[in-house]
Length: 393
Image 1 (tube, rainbow, N blue to C red):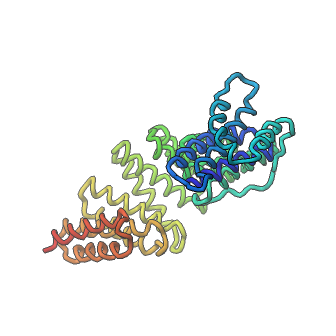
Image 2: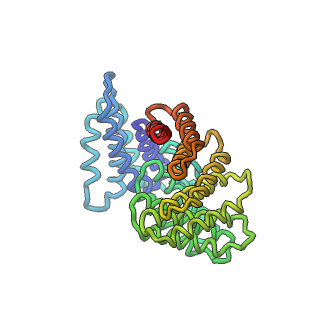
Image 3: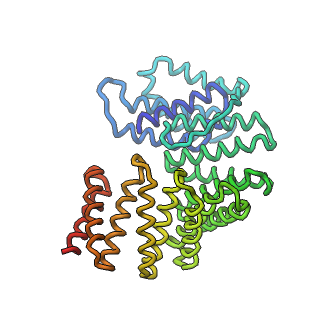
């Protein structure tokens, strides 16, 4: 994490120096990364005279100094007060530090150089933090260059998605709030008959779901359900995205049942929505495994609520089908295998069928062979095996 944070802070300062875009150093994410970098550096040690702390103080000090330069018209000297003690011990290690400070001070005398290039937002969360920061900066430049109008709406959505991506790397809810706010602005400017309307509703709802998971604000969950429902309503019966809208709404209603309402109407709606989504998802569709897993969860919750054996049987069928549809390398496959074993054990405890106890044992043993001993599912599988052995004598 230290190396990643160091690269991210340095990249932010370099982008400011190269482009003159003050927002790059003024954004709260820069201060957050600088503080995290200093904390990480203090936990490390080095014996070559150029310790991790010196490099961290150099990067963080330059960031704070750049902020001071940008904000120098005001009376607040907070950033300079932070920069000076960080940079003072660095002078003995960085010969051209004075030149670097002069270069940062001169940035405001040059025009801002935007870089309105085409931006592709990364679709996975494993990118280095510095690259994600760069995507946000470049996307913001492209928006400024494009000006107002419908052509800039995709860029705004790219920016929202980049903020959401950075949230997955850092856990900073402020990025999710930025994503929600931007998505809402874009949606307000999108006509209801626009072909992107349903997609943008879904994106907004997803951001709201994430923020609910992080901050537990019920209003976010309710707003996400409203957005998912509107997306479903706006889609025609033959819309290729309709199964996705059905599944999204069903899983959101299930989330509300589990964490907020305990209202059977939420759970009943979730079952029907997800069941319909699965029925309309063909074999081989990449989303089929996730929808089948959600259907297993929904029926499992129904069984827990009603004790109806038919719900348990439906949950077991969905669990088997979900694993059949899940690729061997899928990261959620071990958890789904465990759910299958737990569901078999539940049916054994209900009906006494020895085949279910044997299946639960087999699943537990298979899972214990498949995951490392320090994996959380290893302990869960060990417990499942013990329960199956105690129950089946």
